[in-house]
Image (cartoon, rainbow, N blue to C red; front, top):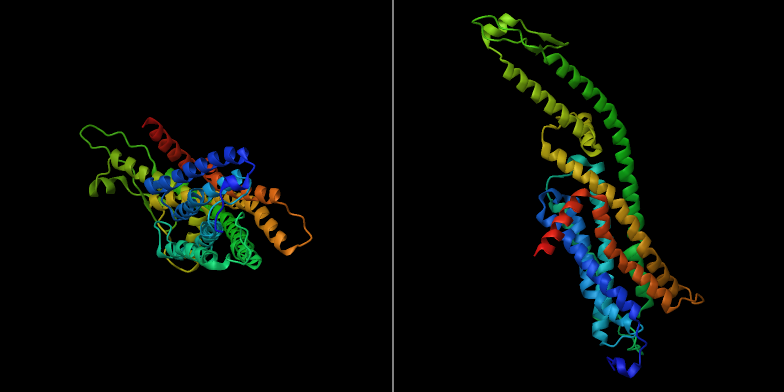
Length: 400
């Protein structure tokens, strides 16, 4: 007997599951579609970290489309499964795979961020690299490999109850929980700990370097700005031009400057504007611990100092810094939502005397699925660029 009909089981309909499940599915789909479209259509959001976030959102989106509808329907029928064994195995496979993909994507993000902080000279923050593509591909292949035994017959045990859809092999429950959650989580937390230690160390160093640079630039700006002399009749206006020497900034002879190359007020103003622009760019770079770290490592190795005039590299670094403030919140919420699920399921398998009823299992499962709807809200709350693009996409959809 591969399937049963609802009428033959007289199920007690759970309308609360339907009332909560349908809005949850719609919220997950809407939020994660907005995340994917935001990164793919907005150039300012196309950073390495955000491509990992797209991969994470894809896992949440697939969960809402492939897993949640059948799960909500089963909960509506009081936890009774009314479809075939094969569809149940496919559901369990997708559930395990997508949950594993979520945690492994977070691990991949932590690896990428750790490399960006600890080995900055080997990290290309301006474009999506082959290493990052390999990390994303590895997360999905590992997730598929971990979940594939279910669809290939692991769930086909003698005496299987057709009214229930669950993982039948208790050893696989422990194995998948270890590989999907209990082993990746400590690795991820250790990487984030090392990353933020590196950021704090280089941030202190950045402030000391910033003070020295600002003092030098202020001296250049103050010394290089002079008032032009009033020209006499028939004479062209001249200004005092300061030239750099080994020890200080000293004025050149006005007569020499006038005879060799006339310097007008416009030229002087242009020079001052360039100094101002350079100072502003260096101030922006000094405020970024990652950029400052790259500068300091280059100086220690005797390499050429990066040129901070590249405004694009400064903007990209600033966006990455915003993303790194969001990621700990995403990881913390993920752990709060999924830790009860894995603890309860492993405890149910390993502790025969523990009384864990279906109500508790249902609650922790719903809590885990709610996480897929929370991530887009976190991005909107903590990242102004995501918030602006979300608003534009939603307004465009409403107008249509």
